[in-house]
Image (cartoon, rainbow, N blue to C red; front, side):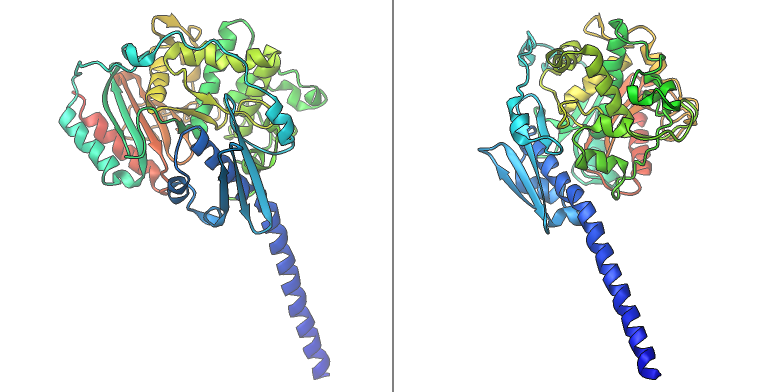
Length: 454
């Protein structure tokens, strides 16, 4: 009897161990596309778009969680990066104009056949013309305490103050750059990853679509798969205000909708519009990167021609506000990743902030329709004053040190463009900042910068 009981216990323990091991293998296997896809895509962009060194990127940007155990091979002949971990492997390729693309759902051969269209380049040389269109900086000094601002900059950049690892920092006051600083491995020509600041650029492109008469953002979207259920009521405005009602999980810490979309799927928009509806359109706020990629896909569909689509951001926005060297990356299906993947310089991000600070006008040309900035900064109904249309708001005083009229472009790992109309101020912060108390430190930084304006 005791022997039988012992065997049962042994079999029970073995069964638990086998089930646990099987689940562990299943879980790891499900995570491998993310574990290997993240470094392959990130490193490919960093090396071929930003011109960074592999060792520096791996030591600073990719030294976390399982990612730090991956092995990546940069192939300069192939313009690609292959990353591996255990039995998993992912490859990302660089194509001129398109940036880096993670191979998912489409063959490498087919993607390499697609060439970026010949676009009319900017007709100006930025190094020979004045700011803000160019890089000749003004000598004018505004009413700001430059000595104290220098101390703030040194604390941030040289001492890792504010509990972060800033790569670049720029402050523009009354349209004039009053501070610009970089870590030694970066400079004014370095293209930095936007992460979710790209969402605000999508807002801009949507505004241009409206100005050009191509869109009414308050009309329901004509997606055939939605016409038999409540999703047929969803508008572009609902998507941009993050109130589409589509089911979505934006948790970056595991295999969620956002990580599956970015690292497991080839067509980000299709993955999003396949999601079921969880709430009536316009009634529930929930942050969704998928919604933004759907907006970009709808732009592509409306424009109707890929050459015109790829030219759109360049000719209608980038060239017109002094950022002609920006790179807007695409997913494997060819749709620009408006949720996450713009690469541009710190000066360019400051110029983008100036476009909004100047009510959609740049270099004496109206880029955005009148009233668009007001629409953008009007709180979404269910956001508690924290979100407008693809911009974050401070109407709820999320940052107590900053005025309520501040709004911002926020990106993963601490990418920020703070726009403060009442102070005629733009603050650009770029870099890898994984600290858990980031909000408090951003609030401290904002307070310190605001304290030097007289």
